[in-house]
Structures are given as C-alpha cells and as structure tokens.
Image (cartoon, rainbow, N blue to C red; front, side, top):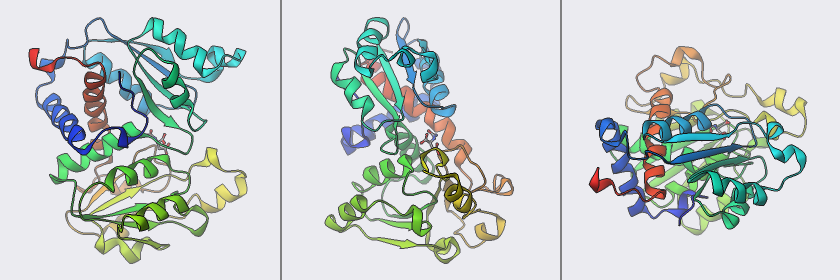
Length: 307
Ligand code: NCD
C-alpha cells in the first residue's frame, strides 16, 4: 500500500505515467466514470480549504465513487481531544482512501503510519502540498509540452508557502531548470532549500523586484502572503500588497510565459490579468481535478487496462 506525503514519493517515471493517465482522463472522461464504483474517499480537513477539498471530492465523484469527511476540526472529534492516529484507525474502517489536511507539519505522516488505507497529504502546515505540485506539474507539462529547460520565477511568500516548497523539490529532478526567487527580505525561501539547490548545483537567484526579472521568466508562479502563519497582524498588513501583478508588469514578460497561482488569490494578481492568454491559474484548477483522479486510481491500484 502506498501513501503520498511528498512529491518525491513518486519517481520521475512514475510521475510521467500518472500525468499520461491524467491527460487520458481529460480526453476520455467517460471511460473512467465508473472506475471507482463502490469506493469511498474520506476528506479529513483540520484546516480551511475550498479548492483542494472540493477538487478531491469532484475527482472521486467523477470516478463513480463516494465521499465522506469533515471540513473543519471543530466539527470533528479532534475538538474532543481525539488524536490523528485514532481518527485514521477509525476512518480506515469506513473508507478506501483518505485525503488529510492539517495545520501541524507531519500530521499526515503520523496518520499514514497507523493507517490501513492510502493517505494523501493534502497540505501540512508550511511544509508540503504534494497534490498541488502534481497539479502544477501537470499544468506545465500539458501547456508547455515539457518539464525541463525553463526558468521559473516563484514570487510572494516563499517562507511559509508550502506549495512553493513542494514544487521546488519536484522540479529539481528535471534537467536545466533555473529558479528565480522573488520575495521581500522577510519572506525569503528557507535556508534548507537554498542549501539543497547549492548541493545539487541547480542555478538560482534571489531578488526583491519582480519587474527586474520578468523578461527572463518562462513561468511565473505567484503566491499569496500566508496570513494564518504570521505571528503578528502588523507584519502581514505591511507585506500583503508587496507584489501586485498587473497589465504593466505583464507587458515586460515573454509572449509565451505562463502565470500560475495555487489560489486563493488575494491582491497579488490584479483581475485585469485574468483575460491575458498567459494567465493559466484557472486552467490549473481544472488540471488539479485530473491530477487527483489519476492519483486516486493509482493509489487504489485500479486496473485501468480493463476499463
Ligand atoms: C494553497 C495551500 O493551501 O497551501 N492553496 C491550495 O491548496 N490551492 C495555497 C494557499 O493557501 O495560499
């Protein structure tokens, strides 16, 4: 039995297989419409989410399966003091697969160690968010046709943004990727990631001004400032509007650049950018459903050749 805790849990070859499956789902949705008949997905969300939870639920429903779960720790037995280990033992009796989001880093790993069903980390604190990374990689691969040979700019809250941390880990395995980290001093990428890039000789640079690097980027990955992980509101208010991507800044970018964002967006991308053909963040949401459908089929070991 396999879990998904980090994007590195799959080899590059396994990811290729998963993305091929996701693209086949995209073109032949009917073929998969009953592939999970009778199966149940439990979504255990101890932290707010709209996109990720509904994306998992839509994915399972598209496969013909059912969904149970909770979307708030306060309406689960966690509020009575139940541990994640006990909760997953119980969920293992009800469902075939579980997607778990938790504010504490490592909580889904603890659950996985006690679980009888596959557990997917749907975001743990500021740590990792592997299914968002599958979504991001599938979007890039589908729209650009490749996962190598590009310069990617990651902009915004690089300190607390778990989607950024997971995406860098996943991309460092592909050839000829260079990273441009764009953030205010206070929200810089963590040292352990810089150390990892240095060790692997992967090119990167850190800048404060987005305008300065805009013309070099093949992909611009925007992120929101993670309010809930700040220690004080004053710092958040000071930093929240540090970057606002608008038409003027877009004019500096390459013609075939892609703008991605894990969403939710706050102010960091002006709505006037939404109609730009390079804005891919809403297409990215759709790819998220295909990526999660492919993941569910893979972790449940559904025999897709017999469909
Ligand atoms: C992200 C998350 O939860 O980390 N959202 C998502 O899952 N699409 C990004 C964010 O909350 O800023």
